[in-house]
Length: 123
Image 1 (cartoon, helix red, strand yellow):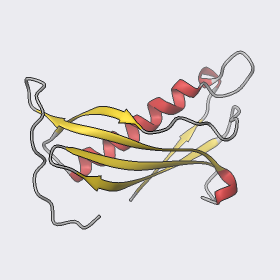
Image 2 (image 1 turned 180 degrees about the vertical axis):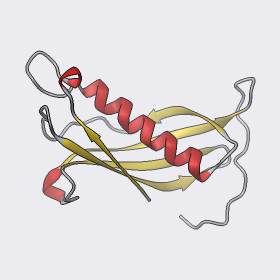
Image 3 (image 1 turned 135 degrees about the vertical axis):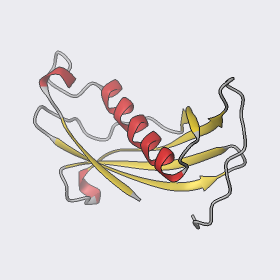
Protein backbone atom coordinates (compact mmCIF):
# COMPACT_ATOMS: atom_id res chain seq x y z
CA UNK A 1 0.00 0.00 0.00
CA UNK A 2 1.17 3.52 -0.81
CA UNK A 3 -0.13 6.86 0.46
CA UNK A 4 0.28 10.26 -1.24
CA UNK A 5 -1.11 13.73 -0.67
CA UNK A 6 -2.01 16.64 -2.94
CA UNK A 7 -2.93 20.25 -2.22
CA UNK A 8 -5.73 21.63 -4.42
CA UNK A 9 -4.55 24.99 -5.80
CA UNK A 10 -6.47 27.72 -7.70
CA UNK A 11 -5.13 26.43 -11.04
CA UNK A 12 -6.90 23.11 -10.40
CA UNK A 13 -10.35 24.74 -10.17
CA UNK A 14 -13.09 25.23 -12.74
CA UNK A 15 -15.04 28.48 -13.16
CA UNK A 16 -17.41 27.44 -10.34
CA UNK A 17 -14.52 27.10 -7.87
CA UNK A 18 -14.48 23.30 -7.75
CA UNK A 19 -11.71 20.84 -8.64
CA UNK A 20 -11.56 19.86 -12.30
CA UNK A 21 -12.38 16.15 -12.55
CA UNK A 22 -9.63 15.73 -15.12
CA UNK A 23 -7.01 16.94 -12.65
CA UNK A 24 -8.16 14.35 -10.12
CA UNK A 25 -8.04 11.60 -12.77
CA UNK A 26 -4.51 12.68 -13.73
CA UNK A 27 -3.35 12.44 -10.10
CA UNK A 28 -5.03 9.04 -9.63
CA UNK A 29 -3.29 7.75 -12.77
CA UNK A 30 0.05 9.24 -11.74
CA UNK A 31 0.05 7.86 -8.19
CA UNK A 32 -1.08 4.40 -9.34
CA UNK A 33 1.66 4.44 -12.02
CA UNK A 34 4.24 5.34 -9.34
CA UNK A 35 3.07 2.39 -7.22
CA UNK A 36 3.37 0.04 -10.22
CA UNK A 37 6.84 1.35 -11.04
CA UNK A 38 7.99 0.90 -7.44
CA UNK A 39 6.52 -2.63 -7.33
CA UNK A 40 8.12 -3.55 -10.69
CA UNK A 41 11.38 -1.65 -11.12
CA UNK A 42 12.81 -1.65 -14.63
CA UNK A 43 9.35 -2.19 -16.19
CA UNK A 44 7.60 0.21 -18.56
CA UNK A 45 3.85 0.65 -17.99
CA UNK A 46 1.03 2.35 -19.84
CA UNK A 47 -2.48 2.91 -18.53
CA UNK A 48 -4.99 0.50 -20.00
CA UNK A 49 -8.08 1.85 -18.22
CA UNK A 50 -9.98 2.89 -15.14
CA UNK A 51 -12.99 0.85 -14.15
CA UNK A 52 -15.35 3.57 -12.90
CA UNK A 53 -15.36 7.34 -12.82
CA UNK A 54 -17.84 8.72 -10.28
CA UNK A 55 -17.13 11.76 -8.14
CA UNK A 56 -18.84 11.46 -4.75
CA UNK A 57 -18.16 14.96 -3.38
CA UNK A 58 -16.98 18.29 -4.72
CA UNK A 59 -13.54 19.60 -3.74
CA UNK A 60 -12.57 23.25 -3.23
CA UNK A 61 -9.36 25.29 -3.14
CA UNK A 62 -7.06 24.55 -0.24
CA UNK A 63 -8.28 20.99 0.27
CA UNK A 64 -5.65 18.38 1.02
CA UNK A 65 -6.39 15.10 -0.72
CA UNK A 66 -5.10 11.72 0.45
CA UNK A 67 -4.55 8.99 -2.15
CA UNK A 68 -4.38 5.38 -0.94
CA UNK A 69 -3.07 3.02 -3.64
CA UNK A 70 -3.11 -0.76 -3.26
CA UNK A 71 -2.24 -3.54 -5.72
CA UNK A 72 -5.26 -5.82 -6.12
CA UNK A 73 -4.59 -8.07 -9.10
CA UNK A 74 -1.71 -9.27 -11.24
CA UNK A 75 -2.06 -10.87 -14.65
CA UNK A 76 0.45 -12.11 -17.20
CA UNK A 77 1.32 -8.65 -18.55
CA UNK A 78 -1.04 -6.40 -16.58
CA UNK A 79 -1.50 -5.24 -13.01
CA UNK A 80 -4.36 -3.47 -11.24
CA UNK A 81 -4.34 -0.93 -8.42
CA UNK A 82 -7.29 0.21 -6.34
CA UNK A 83 -7.10 3.95 -5.62
CA UNK A 84 -9.20 5.64 -2.91
CA UNK A 85 -9.13 9.42 -2.65
CA UNK A 86 -10.14 11.11 0.60
CA UNK A 87 -10.58 14.75 1.47
CA UNK A 88 -8.28 15.41 4.41
CA UNK A 89 -6.05 12.86 6.04
CA UNK A 90 -8.48 10.89 8.17
CA UNK A 91 -9.23 8.14 5.63
CA UNK A 92 -12.76 7.91 7.04
CA UNK A 93 -15.40 6.49 4.74
CA UNK A 94 -17.38 9.76 5.04
CA UNK A 95 -14.41 11.64 3.56
CA UNK A 96 -14.17 9.43 0.43
CA UNK A 97 -14.49 11.54 -2.70
CA UNK A 98 -13.40 9.08 -5.40
CA UNK A 99 -12.45 5.45 -5.90
CA UNK A 100 -11.44 3.45 -8.97
CA UNK A 101 -9.29 0.59 -10.18
CA UNK A 102 -6.50 1.48 -12.60
CA UNK A 103 -5.12 -1.19 -14.94
CA UNK A 104 -1.63 -0.97 -16.41
CA UNK A 105 0.02 -3.14 -19.02
CA UNK A 106 3.76 -3.70 -19.30
CA UNK A 107 5.24 -2.86 -22.70
CA UNK A 108 8.63 -3.11 -24.36
CA UNK A 109 10.46 -0.33 -26.25
CA UNK A 110 8.32 -1.07 -29.33
CA UNK A 111 5.03 -0.72 -27.47
CA UNK A 112 4.26 -4.44 -27.42
CA UNK A 113 2.89 -6.22 -24.36
CA UNK A 114 5.44 -8.27 -22.44
CA UNK A 115 5.04 -10.48 -19.35
CA UNK A 116 5.52 -9.09 -15.88
CA UNK A 117 8.45 -10.41 -13.88
CA UNK A 118 7.51 -12.92 -11.20
CA UNK A 119 7.13 -11.44 -7.71
CA UNK A 120 6.96 -13.19 -4.37
CA UNK A 121 4.66 -10.55 -2.87
CA UNK A 122 1.14 -11.91 -2.12
CA UNK A 123 -1.83 -9.77 -3.15
